Length: 312
Ligand SMILES: Cc1cc2nc3c(=O)[nH]c(=O)nc-3n(C[C@H](O)[C@H](O)[C@H](O)COP(=O)(O)OP(=O)(O)OC[C@H]3O[C@@H](n4cnc5c(N)ncnc54)[C@H](O)[C@@H]3O)c2cc1C
Image 1 (spheres, rainbow, N blue to C red):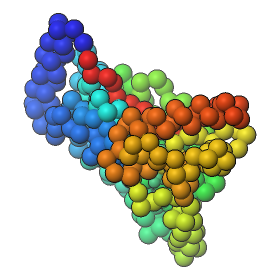
Image 2 (image 1 turned 120 degrees about the vertical axis):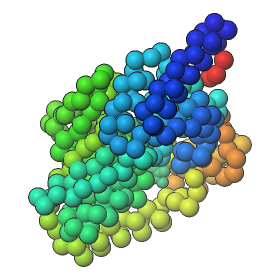
Image 3 (image 1 turned 135 degrees about the vertical axis):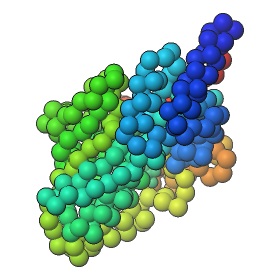
């Protein structure tokens, strides 16, 4: 970055911090993102802000969209790889917005930062079925809707009823039918941020729900490296073959670069052995993509979101 631009950026950042102080928001400067992401890699973000409620969230988004500073929203960080050079600009974290309410008619209202596992636990207590598929998915409502997270034959799109979005200073509510969902992707309006969502669940037998969840979790613990830092499936499953099977056939199980390796338990998971760097993970991703294309003619598309900018 040239000197002039750097000064302007610094001044803008100062103004943002002053305004955050005025609003009473909680923020941290120079935050190491390896403490945030489930993969435990990533450099420093210039600023991270933790809105504590809907009003603060909207105020922060309005503020950031009115100044020339790059920003992004993160939930649990369980599907995100942050570059070693960190994040230039602001991360808005929804981690402090975890409110969940179960209404009498089986509707669950959840804030963007509500953890999917907590919704599942509350629905079990209320004897509501439909959210079992999410057992073991460690994300939030915002990340889950954005990714159309899914497992065990279910996806967010099957249970979501409405999504509240912040969009360029306005609040927009979309019903499920107004959102196009596909495999690990939802077509939300460009630049929109999920602030809240409702889910519709059905009355079910509590013991049966618990049994299903237990089975899903047991299967996960046998087939995924759940005790090691990872970010879930690295690649989407291509049409031709599940990504894990392909990577296994290509000999990637246990293949290591630096502190990162393809898990021996499930080849579509990269685990952080110790002090892995984002560059190790990116190198693994690159080589796997190259080999899949060269040897099998298959294009592997990353499921994880790679974020951050080279600081100049
Ligand atoms: C051990 C493990 C197992 C996993 N298993 C599964 C699985 O079975 N199925 C599955 O689908 N995924 C799985 N994942 C991946 C991950 O948990 C999901 O993709 C989850 O939905 C991500 O949620 P998050 O809040 O952590 O998202 P983050 O990683 O914080 O963000 C992911 C993306 O969503 C965007 N985002 C986050 N919040 C918002 C918001 N409020 N508004 C707009 N955009 C937002 C971010 O900008 C980013 O682009 C797994 C991950 C791990 C670590």
